[in-house]
Image (cartoon, rainbow, N blue to C red; front, top):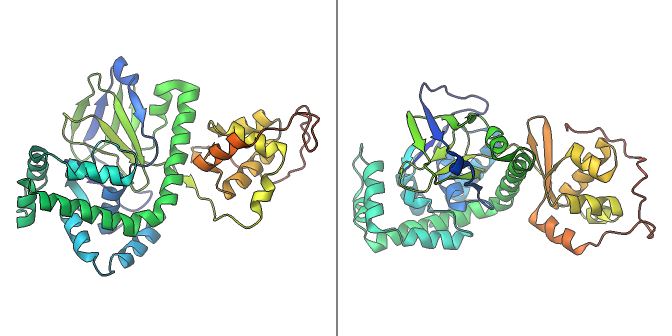
Length: 366
């Protein structure tokens, strides 16, 4: 089972006298990993909690309103009811809905379809220990193949209706958070990465602690920890309850600087040596100040170059405390690989020693 426990209105955190404490050894610190890209099944399950929660942060209210409208379409009410029977706004939900991270939505659903019978029984017995399950859940717990197929089909229908239209936003937010974590890792190692995780997570070596509904100690014992940034996670992080499963911690993504839809003609602004250099440099995450130092320009100018690249969908920018971290998106990385940089003296090139700057836009936090 997993535990979902959203905390209420944005900016308001319920205080708990209990906590989840994750204990690291030296081997565990060497085995901390960050998933590559969004985990769409975690997003799906957590979005179901958001869908039913009476209070959600402002950043998710528009999605919830649109999703509730979309799910009134013919053929979607039954799959949604099936899923909300398994996943409520708070509390436990079955681990088999979020199998180990798999690249792509269809392969992840295939993993759900092949869940072993003993796992179904264990997960569902825990989720429904305090309430009587409907007959179809009892059949699911007994390993009835058509019931398991119905759950996977419901997940696909729900995902296609309300998650796929949001996928670009989810990907931008998750990739932006990953850039922040990579920046911390590059500049301070694994402990800096853990120290930089968002509240209520707190790192005090060798323990990572967070507010949690149950008082619990998780000893990693050399297995390491997989970190999963999630767009639909808010408030407290989420983890698997079964201590035998590979340890996972799902946490809210860092606050993302949204990009507007690309405007006609904006791509033309990318031409020129400085922005090409910026795009090449941002294949690794950099703060605005670091980007300015790399380009040999002022911080306001670096901010402007990053903003143009962001508006064209080539860079994601994420706020991390007082710093804004920029990183090329997958599209930006592909384009960077196909744009040879001009050499000094070529037409349109800029002498790298020339640090004069004509861009006077106000700079963002560094």
